Image 1 (cartoon, one colour):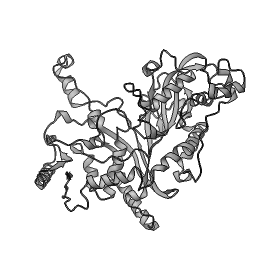
Image 2 (image 1 turned 45 degrees about the vertical axis):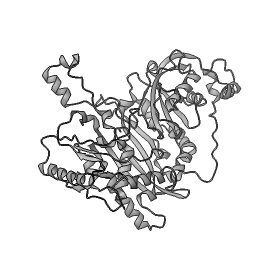
Image 3 (image 1 turned 90 degrees about the vertical axis):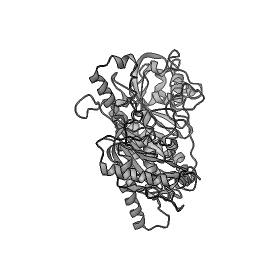
Image 4 (image 1 turned 180 degrees about the vertical axis):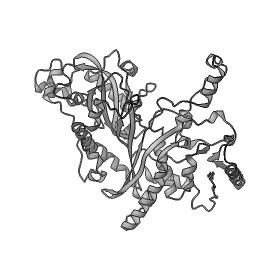
Length: 505
């Protein structure tokens, strides 16, 4: 297995005091054979500025490995209803079309070319390992002497902005589904050290204590839990047929009870920006129509109710941002689609970017929901800064809690890698094309070059704790979470019951 440079500490790749030049990718002369009217190396070089569409000889399914800096884009997913919105997929589709990979009759409709992706990312999030499959028009001899399609994608890259790059293109089997077969997604989050209380004058022992304490907080997320409080939970709730609908009327009693009691896992609910639109849960106000199953712990229920009553008496001019459910509420169900499995959630050692110190968080999971990682980080930071009690970690992962949690900035979140296997087959069966994409030295070199020359110079701009976005985010966190330092922080934990009150100014 090839050793990726990305496994080394990020500090080794942070830019020094030097300017970075972005050059158009060069097309090797061996690509001449796939351009119509191209007969010499000079012609291929001219294609950088006067490029021609390649001449298609067939259409077949391929998989692309794509990297991008998401700072200037509104996420990965294309927005057909508003063409003015800049997205990664919009740029990719246009570049592939100009290169000759999409027919004019299919351009503008990704469904016609069976476009699919391994995961989606939110606005501002970066990626080094997004896999996209599509039925692409292929030139003759596309992979002759070039099994990873480097020359092929270089022509596509000549139409892309410098902050988006296709690393490789290989033939894919017809049954390949990048989203369903991706069983591990590995994210990194770069966090300024000062945000979690590490000062520049601290001793090595003090730094180690802070990192160990933060790791203890982060480790609470590992395992399989309902992460409904870490997303817009309504987006991951199965919509049942109405009781007046023909579908519902034709169901037997057994079928109705099965559908109502066991909402299935939503297709497509497996990544950072699976759904567009809607307001984030940090802006919603929790209502008072609480519910809980009848088999809840009596002592826990009593403690929760008592604590909620105390908080209501504190101020009539307050907004309750957490509650426990007491009565059945079909409009706020939690099911299997809200559960996620986290394999790793940890903090690395202290690193340095020019003058800014930071730590790298590793968050690995089978899949993620909209805003999940950023809310995990935001909550962990709030607990580390003692703005929220540690009990909130346990409470927020309880099925019957409803809590509004802080959302961390997106500018330093990176999809670093992923793994694939065929779920329908026993054992860890991998497709050859995905092994090539993930483990090939030639592909990894392409990824590393993009990472060091394009992505890190951009991400490093967001590591200053007193700069954007951290100064404003910390101010909002301190102001809206726990009422720290204002002399009226209520005792918000009783047993597993926790109610955080945000007072209006």
